[in-house]
Image 1 (cartoon, rainbow, N blue to C red):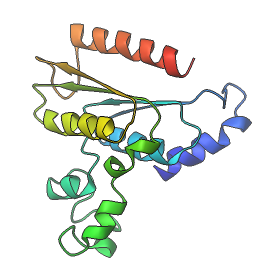
Image 2 (spheres, rainbow, N blue to C red):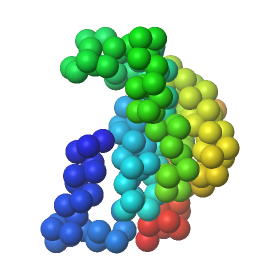
Image 3 (tube, rainbow, N blue to C red):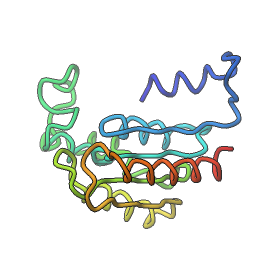
Image 4 (cartoon, rainbow, N blue to C red):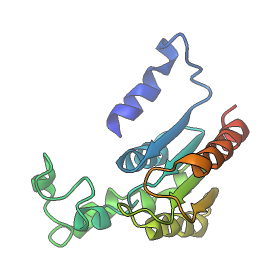
Length: 165
């Protein structure tokens, strides 16, 4: 997430970029990175998540999704059981009121990331007054394919056209 924030800050120096129009997109663990950057950035106009891991870092830790034991530096934080406040503070699901509009997409047949995590993120976004939409793909797996991919891309482009273009 820190690298994404640095990239956003460097956009005025990238000739091909328009720093006034910033959209973030992430899949799986990349979704978690995009969401963290979105709730911190004052520049991001929209965020799109596909099959994202949980916005609650305690849940990710307990399920080995990117920040569990053995991950570089995680031993400094301890576990959610030993240091619950740190995990609460670094969980973007607690800061969705600062998020730009978000579009969440998840395959209901995802065998890697539970679809309930996207449903929980969507519910939390609405509860915190954030602008969010949720699309579920009944036969879609962790990586959307075929007609699901086509539909997700149509929806994503429409969303980005509305909020970024």
